[in-house]
Length: 408
Image 1 (cartoon, helix red, strand yellow):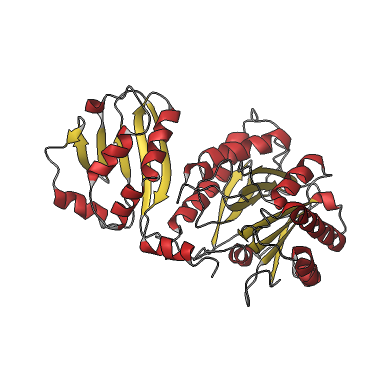
Image 2: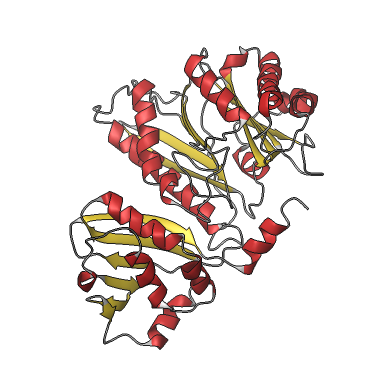
């Protein structure tokens, strides 16, 4: 079960964005596994994709369409098959899916972005299965289908991930709504497993792309479940411009910062939801590193801790084995680190001071923190003013079971 994560509620439609879901039978039986998103004409779209060199066929096609196409009008997302490691046949399937969507919606194939998630390396008749349900999917397009779409894109997720925020700008209400899926194979690099965020704000061009990249830097690029980066990671930001405001085309526009912050809040909520629903997770663990020379070394320490199986299993066991924390900090590759200046906290309890056990620390105090579902970890390196935060989870028996049974 997800840690402190409830099913979506109070999800707000975004003017100019319609969604629909269908059962295409791609892998699952008796569940919706196809999502169609239709954007109003004139909508602006930015995206970031995985840097995994074995990126999936839909990633290659989506990148090409985004760069060379006439402007995005639709997104098609299938669950159950990643269409990765499928060679030329996979590319043809992704392109054929775009053609099928384009024919139904009356747009160019290059205006369609395909996305897939699921098992890697398995061939499947994607285009045929998608084509069979597309007519009904198009008929069902509506602005209020965000929650259904968030459920349809799930794989090993246990709860749909979707949220909304609104802000006021020059007397106009701006809506931001997003959804994401992800539970395992989570260590994003310029994206997440799959995430889609839409706003009716008039963000255009370079400002839209910069907004997405800045939001990602503080959200999806700060999470890890198991240290693995998917072949299919993608995050899309869609701006329909339906709010009655002049376009925001540059980051120097005084309105840009407020819009970026609203989008970042949605992205952070979704990113944390992915970690809270990490495969087999029982603990949610924010890790904040301060006192570094620069942000890069703070992140290096944070990820070294978050990727340690010894640390993650200690959290699962509610065992305040703080020696494992010190071992990870010391092996993070900061060669000139003065360990005598390091301090470590579990929650509000300081366990390490001046590089050694805090004289006031007791095992009972550490245990009281470790039994909680949310366990903030804070480290002060004592060597500068930089800081960084990431979010991770524990490693349980269920993580092994879920992944051992994934294809069976």
